[in-house]
Amino acid sequence: MSASSIGPTRYAAWRKTSLGRIVERLEHQALLGIAPPLRGLNVLDIGCGDGVLAAEMATEGARVTGIDADPAMIMAARATVTEGQFLAGDACRLPFSDASFDLAVMNTVLCLIHDRRAALAEAARVLRGGGHLLIGELGRWSPWAVIRLMRVWLGTRLWRQAHFSDARLLAAEMASIGLAVEAMRGAVFFPPWRWAARLMAPFDPALGARTTVGAAYIAMTAQKI
Figure (cartoon, helix red, strand yellow):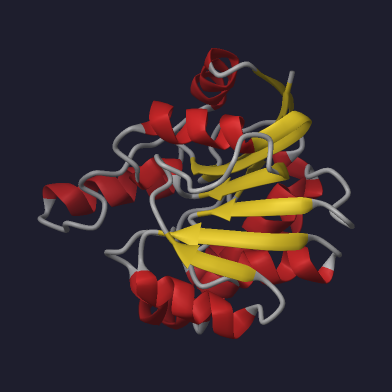
């Protein structure tokens, strides 16, 4: 999640855990598995965080530009992806011209943005005709969502403003900005326990290709009509 309340240090700590590594691998696999071929594309990573996903896309041949609200994240992203361009900015007011990019990516970003419609409209604006929007979002019907909501009730502030999505909501949001959904995938069907992740991770991609119900993470790609 790319939010100023999280920061690069927390990202790094999450990746040091075996659960974090498994979850991130499955999420990125689901997301990039439904992306168009990346080689040669001009890609905008909106809410790029510390640049780890951008680095994966650059490795596949994409020309990556990243934007994030947190300057600390931008510094981390620049260190991670030396050939990319990264700047601090607002997802609801992107500093780019219309039709500037072939692909826009929003990975666990909408869940932490108050004005989802404005952010989506901006992503659509900077896409060329026929370009794609690639989204990864927190699933509504999953054990992770239940536990996160329980933590909010117990006083945790991190997830208090978070929004959880499902396939129907995401499809409706795409239609509202003139994009046609091409594919959806689910990922992370196990509860947030290390032993469960190790046991169930090998079966996760096959399940995610069939449904998003129960997934903690939903990946979707849509094309600008």
